[in-house]
Image 1 (cartoon, rainbow, N blue to C red):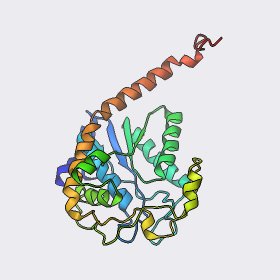
Image 2: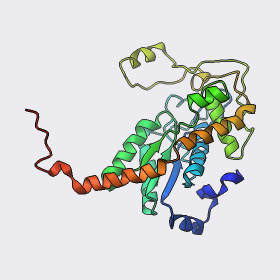
Image 3: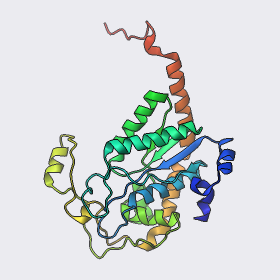
Image 4: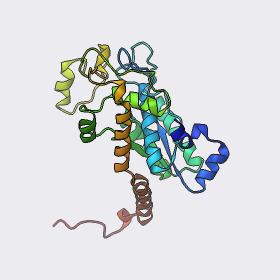
Amino acid sequence: MEEYKNLRMDLLSSRDVQSYMSKNDMVILPIGCFEMHGPDMPLGCDYFHAWGQAIILAKEWECLVLPPVIYTFPGASGPWPGTVEISCKITMEYIKEIVMGLIKAGFKRIVLCGTHGPLKSMLSCVIEDIYLATKVVVMHVMPPLMPEDLMREKLGYLRGEDILLAASLKILGMHGVYDPSSIVDKPQEFPFETIAELRKANAVMPWTFVKDYQHTGLRKKVTLKDVDTAIEIMKEAARRIKDFPEHFAKYQKEMKELWERAPWKGADVWTEIR
């Protein structure tokens, strides 16, 4: 964890942050969940790996990372023991308030980081609402830090929450509190076959897990010995998107100039089609 100490806002003083903001305006907010993740994974799985991935990105992007948002709408694990279930509405309102607070504090490039399933739709609404109200562009990233090519080449299997969690815990200084090894293989799956059929029509529906392993699956081949290799994969993948901060700033500038020009107001904006 010592390697990442100066990236974590929770470990910095107010004066440290003031110094940082004199030369940088970017910050990452990890967003997770607190829910059942099978028979052995910690309930904090999603916020641990959102935080771990955010730290890897912050190292590459030379920016700060906030402590994670822990409690959000969980989705299909709602009634399982230990899951803390709050509504989509409250989740979105809370995250919006945090982001508005960051804007007020002077941060300009705000990145929401998380791969918890329901976040994609909820955070899309949050960043759109913030843009409507403030014209500040906020980003949500679902980091591609365990890409298929690197995972196949270096570990011989694909990304899963088992190895992602184990690697993230080491990044956070908690190596070994979770062991991803399993004596059985179980698939990640929907609770009912009808869901797969309905999704052929691009349907969206609620569902609830009926077996503990359905959320993440279980894999014999993943072990704690793989963690260091997994972290190196994450770092290499982060280097592939090292220019994200520059592209973010450029996009914000483009959007600002677009609204200043307001081309939709011009009489000559229309394309002649006949």
